[in-house]
Image (cartoon, rainbow, N blue to C red; front, side, top):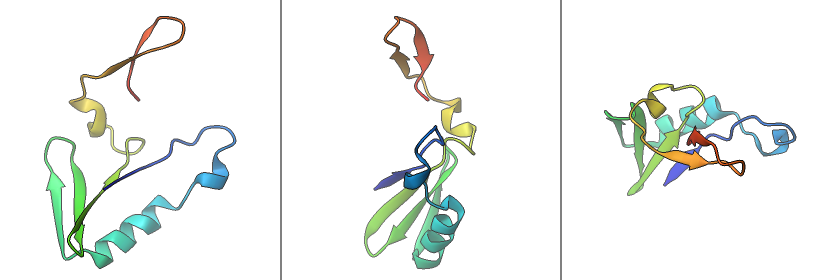
Length: 81
């Protein structure tokens, strides 16, 4: 399961959570923690489930190896995030 950090846009504060608190909870409940090399993010193993916390806002290396693009409604290409 991937938990993806919500980017802090206008009018989304009601959906935001304390991402640092969530990460501490995952760390305390995990029986094993593995860091993925390519994206440099951690994968937490909890009760037979793999949980990955994706923090693209704080971890610039998340996008370093990405080759995905998106097309805007005006026809411009942008990086996916």
